[in-house]
Image (cartoon, rainbow, N blue to C red; front, side):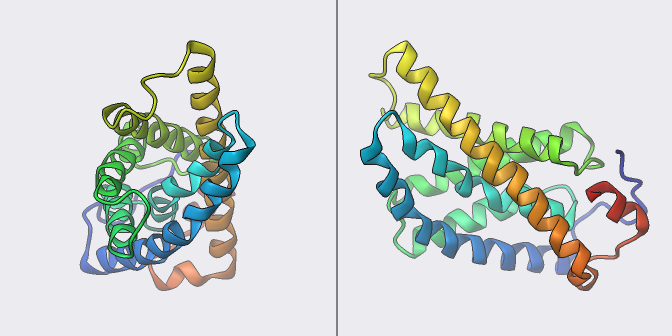
Length: 198
C-alpha cells in the first residue's frame, strides 16, 4: 500500500538525532550479537549465516521509524561505526560492511520512492543489504574457495537470516512500536502512516 507523503522529505535535525539514537542502540546490539555468529559456526553448513540479518537491521528499522531518504544508510553506517568503536570482531572492515549494507537497503527504499514501508519492501531491503555485504566478503577472501553448492548454501542462508531478522522482525517491531504511540514522539503520524504498517 502506497504511503501519501504529507511532510517534507528532507532530513531535519530531529530525524538525524533519532536515527543516530537508533543506530547507537543497534551498534551495541551488533557488538553483543557477535558471539551468536561464533556459536552457530561449529554446527557447520554455514549455519552462522542465519544470524547475519541482525547486522542489517539498523537500516530497515530506522527507515520504518523515520521513512525519509538517507535514513537507512545513515543508521547502518552509524551502527557499524559504534560497533567498531566497541571492539567489534571484524575491526575496520565493519565500516565497509556498514556502508554497503546501508546502501543496499537505501537503494530499495529509493526504488519505491520512499513511499512504501510494508513487509515485502522491508524484506527486499534486507536482501539488498545481504547482497552488497557479499562484496566485502569477496574482497577479504572469505568466500573465494567455496564450491558452487557450498556458495549457494552460504548465500541462501544469509538471505534467509536477512529476511527473517532485518525484514520480517524489523517490520513487526516497528509496527508494535507504532501501536503503542511511541512513534508519535519522533515523527508526525497520520492514519496513512499506520495503514502502511497495517
